Every structure is written in structure tokens, then in C-alpha cells.
Image (cartoon, rainbow, N blue to C red; front, side):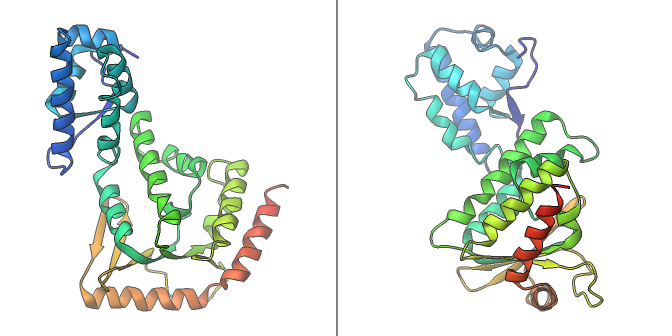
Length: 284
């Protein structure tokens, strides 16, 4: 860690982010505790191992502090766990906004269907596979941002254990299960993870063979979310943009395509057998 004003201990907050109020409230509380202890910002920062500038940013609510900074602050200020407890309030705020928006949608869904054509779908990824995907991104992500995106992706996977159960269906393009992102060991563990998830009663994973001549998914990935209120929305995440599809006619097109894609893919049972075969190939 650095004491020269470097900002390794947190993440910048978008001024338009709806989580700003929570971050500002935490910053105000931290300032109250610091002043009550009779410490100047520079002294407090030095005690934590960070610069004065970072402390001011956090207290103004323009910087989201890392969990470990709050733990250290709790210790330095003798807060008896009251500052450390604020980590829970900031847990979701530190994730990228578009990820939080998608996570909110997923939390309202009774059924999610997704066709993935260039990598294993985010909800199905192991931590090592997801890390490898972010690691090869260009321009290169800073380690700080990589960790932030990785934590957010892993948090979304809580949906597999959420009650009541959400029905989850996935169609994976065969090539996504063959490309050794992160190396053979990472791919092997990813395939084993797919086998584990595919055996859950509320999860169905299908493989779209490369040899298929008829393929309704040539326009790209699809994600559909059927919400508790009976409505269905689509979600698309491409290169530099993400888009929520709510127009009934457009949603209808996506539903039609996804239904045909599922019919063209291997059945869930055939798909698990296929994934098992691919896993065996990673030993050679």
C-alpha cells in the first residue's frame, strides 16, 4: 500500500450513480468517527497506510472504500465493529452500475433463458474462467477494475441458490466449450462446473453443435428474463453497449429465436454427455 496519496483502496463513483447516497452516508460516518478521535485526515490516512487525499475523497462520497480499509479504520478508531459493519451497505455499490442493473432484473425473474455464442455465459463461469476472460480484455483492465468486475460477476451467481428457485436455461455454442481461455486446467474446471450445474433440477444446459446447418442464433447472443409480474424483457450486452429490450414486438422476436435455438441444440441430457466428452479431451 502507499501513503503518497495513491488510491488503491477504493473505486471511483459515477456522479450519476444511484448508490451515491449510501456512499456519501458512509463517508460522513467515517469523518464523524475520525474527528471524534481527534485525528486529522493526514494522521488518519497514515495510520491506515493511505494518503490524505484518499481519505478526503472517501469522506466526500466520491470514492468507494475497499472492505479492508473499513476493517482497518474500525480498528484504528476503536469503533467496536460499527465501521466494519458498513461493508454490507457498500457491498453492491462497488460493483459496476450495469452489472447491478442486470442483477436487479435477475432477482425479479422467475425464468431466465440465454444463448451464448462467444464465451461461457457469465452465470455459468467459474472464478478462474471469468478472471481469464477479464485478463485478456483489450485495452487491458487495471488490476483494481478486474477485481471489481470479477467480484460482481461472482455475486450474480447467488441466483442458483435463491428461493423460490429460478428456472435457468442456457444454450452454449460448442466453440465456447472448446476454446481454452486461461489454459487447459481452467477449461477443464469450467467444464466440470457446467456438469455440476447441469445436474441441478432447475437448470438446463444445452450445446449447439458447430456442425448444425440450420441455426436461428446467427444474429448473436440472446438473454430473456420472465419477471414475476408476467412480463418478459430481453437483455443484450455487446462490445461497448448494453441494451434492455422491452418493446413487445422485439421481445416476441427474441422469444421465437430462442425457442428455435433450443430445438436445434442437443437435448440437456445429450449436452451433458457431450460436455463430459470434452472434459475428457482436456486430459490429453
